[in-house]
Length: 480
Image (cartoon, rainbow, N blue to C red):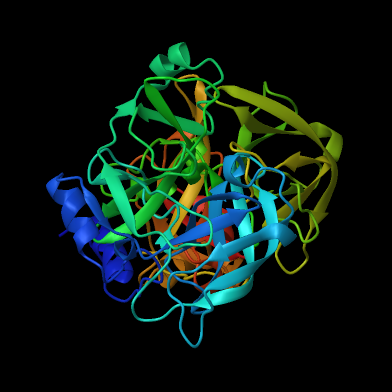
């Protein structure tokens, strides 16, 4: 087994052996058996253990208790539903009916707040005043952990009545429809935040039915049905994947909305990753676009809620002689569209000379295409199986990301021999880039290290270090 394949195996084992799932892996098995066998039919509602009833004024519809693979506590305080369900009802007049009443969890829970997701505006995030404690017989459904597939999925619906718990759910086989075809039929269809399936019946006036899939017994919520203004042979769903983890915690960093970097972490697919999978990546131009560009990362600033104005890069990109007026930062704002931002100031660190912080003149708004990476000193797992070397390149008319594995085993002496005192006295981390093209000019934009998060940053990406010295595929990295 080669070294790259070995690192991949370790990464997989870390996820599936040592991890405990706090979402999706419910004990009820009839739902899974029904979907896997494609014998879609009606089942008792308790088979979907994450369903609740949302009651808003005189209306009732389906809500979904949601979570992620590792929750900070054994409790759930978020219900997802749709704006079509709740409308303009005040949170004070909304109730959540819980079918799992016991001496710990009540049958009716009051609501603390209701917010529309900033990008997928049809999805409502309902925060409970009192979290529901996760017990042995149920778990919340997962959001965002694995990409939506075409197999082992279902549209789930139910007849919902105010003041009553759901008795049964009905399942239908979904057939995905191409976005262009859907747009012809439904003019207001928004392919950036919605997806389309062939029409399926609804038990509740086409409101908040769920598009769910199961992968290795893990249930995930991928879409919530949109109430359409006119009849159509197609059904439209709000795309839950486009929310990242913004629905289940208070962070807005380290996840992509359009693509997923994790699916490229496998042998043979580590060369040219769409930049949508790493939306924190930006191109830094020094002395205009005619000069070279280098790698930068948009980070979550301490006090910025709606955008980020801080970009980290390396001193090899921005020398001591470089002025802020010499620098331009290019970032993505649409499927094939980029915008530029000028730099207000340059900050350097005496204890980390390789690290450069660019303060932008204006914050870059968080969007589907530009989202900051997380920055937390103790928030990630630092190992070759959990981390990547990332750099930005320009290929085939668009920016791409190089996402490579590295080897750090017994590399200290190698770097000491290669870089002498510049390395030994720096305290840097030594690593060998396992990309076979590491010496090519197209990778000269410089590497940065990102790592998978842990605990509160579970399944997010964090910035761990920037490249300092480089010769061939060998480099030293200053850790953040």
